[in-house]
Length: 432
Image (tube, rainbow, N blue to C red):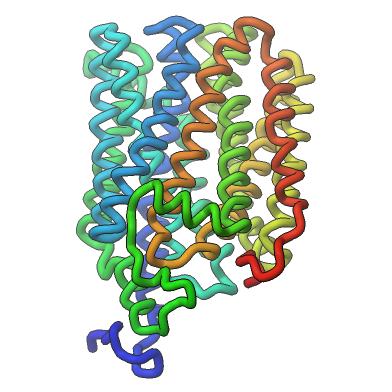
């Protein structure tokens, strides 16, 4: 029997089956997409260093981050107009095109094409990030943190193993005549294409369109926001400016990502200083696998804590872990095990700020403007990470890795003050 989503609330059928189907599908595609994103990222800095030089390695990595940020604008516009499914499919296919261009650029040693490919490669990241918001379109308020974190956690299965597949992918693609380090990006393009096809065929009914139909059956909000479905960044900014909780959510996501990208993107280069070329891919694979495990493996616990303790305490806990990570990694020297501990803490801190911040943001804005605000958040997050990645190569070359971690730690301190600010009376927050 079809559900009449425009009927009065008491006449509607339960949307729980739709939500369960959506979560299962997102879980699957996050695994596939996680493989695609991570297998490329794991060798991205090394490939860029060989094609464009060490100083530009950070810029190449930042191109992927900038791509994910900029693509959030058209992707969320598509979602606002047509739903989550076409937006996610567009993002994944764009990432696949980027992976193919990186392979071509590496073979032809074309630096501008490499940067363009990395820019478009960010489409895979954009899709993975937007999937977490898709998970809460129909979620019950008391389970938003857990269901969002479940989709974040799904990335673990593919992402933790993916860096260790880099050597296999490189060897396989080498047999096809591709140059060293290009193979992982060919495999990334294939993974993104598969994820796009699965979503195109199976993500029905669309969760965002379903949530809007449900909202249309409810009484309009007191401020009339139900009738405004603007998709632009200006509308998103107005919505965020009116809501302190939304501002904190965006700041938590952006600053956590900035610190993580700044430290993580130069860690492979740091490892390359003390390991031979024949061994560096294996070591980088192990260290990044541990880091990614920190990012994703415990995210269901982070989501449970977010629902149980509240959004702000988990954000503050994430900040504390980020500061500890910078301290450990910055003082590790060339001690690979200690550096690995720092990267694990870095991942855990990112998980806290990402899960709690994203949950707080999603529940703090009306359904009508939610895609635009979420796209705005991913834009800010991406630009923050891109700036950190771009600067990290120059900082690494000028003053070294320890100073890089110190600057990253300083950057996150203002978030503590924002999270500890009293909430104005009557302002929407995580408790409301």
